[in-house]
Length: 151
Image (cartoon, rainbow, N blue to C red; front, side, top):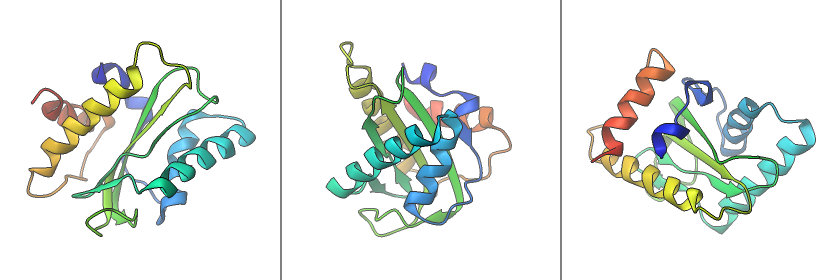
């Protein structure tokens, strides 16, 4: 399941934004949505963050929501070389972000399955000495993440 969602055209290897909202905007921009739909999606993601930060610690965040602006479940992966303050549980900057957006109706439970797969990858990454941020291509990043997907 996760291998279908990890797509090279949905990867940002060097996020420029320095704060949570800016990073989310940068990632949303890959979806090429009309401005009003971008704002709606950003609002949904920020509302989710108000419930509790999706910065899970160890340099990883998993911002996620359901939204009417997408037609399919979508995963965007972003890397922040400098790190961004994401109100993470451990107080440390976030370097790797997995933004998951799903349709409101999801009878096959893809959203929860995908969140579970991302959590498995995050657990594997958390056991590493440090999170890698030096990827030369989206494919290299995806191959790196897939090593943890099957653990």
